[in-house]
Image (tube, rainbow, N blue to C red; front, side, top):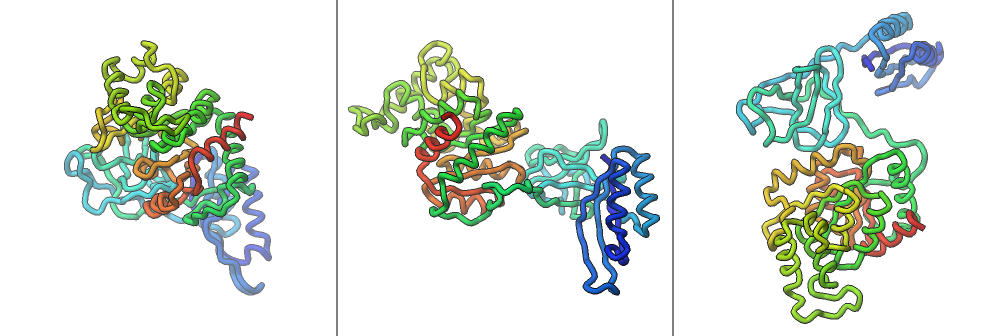
Length: 405
């Protein structure tokens, strides 16, 4: 679709100019989005409208612009983005445009290009090797000589286009309350997950170790088996304690079915790590029949992708854990393509890390017993996050009841 911005001035409503323009544009296969409007207060006051016009072909655009011109409209001539080469690998040029996580377009070669893989705190690179493309690039990936957008000229950040129907996500924002009607909220989340799964979309789960400690792992296994999970982000602790529970029945040395402390249970997580390392990895342990249940077993047997990102405090770690944080970020970036919903469950660090690379168009739900976790996500730019202050085991149980009943 080709895009132009046009301006109309005059008595647009009294003379039915605006309805006439819309009708003529739509009859030629085009579309209009009103960006700005100033409507006169009296019949003698002029009105002004700036709108974005799209057309399916260059011929249709030419015809549409001629029609708009007959109504007194004019094309707003845009200035192209300023491009400067990256001075060296891993360094942006001075004054580079720093991206947000909102949908973004840049004006280049006479048209607005959508910025691909948009995320916050990156730069925009224009690539013309095949056809003109604009893409977000984190600083460690920039290559010397790549053309980077500098300044704000020719950059357009779009607001989110929410669905018209009233839904749970209409009150996303920084407000966090433990008094929301959580049962109704979970029901709406379940309905949205069913819609996403029905059209083959991706749902991402970001997990903290409390998911395992609270005994919520069994609910996760049901969601995975039912096809409601396409990707999981977690750390060494989640996988370790899940495997500990699968092998020894404990998490942090506590039996989850009785709450009793196991004799020598403090070493169970280390013994679990050791057995998996001996097998060669989590997938190897599943194939060898060593790991026969649990969340990690479910992910492997149902072919669900997962990224385990390490930290300085990890024991082991397990072989699949990516200890290089930059490589872990890149692995997560690869997996978020196509994600439509992210559920962040009892995790602060991994939730914030994921929020930093998610486009704002991804519906994001953060569940934690501590409301500060959601607040931190929003404060760091993930404004689309909806917070549910709740025990994660209750939330996942209620979600399963709605999805799998």
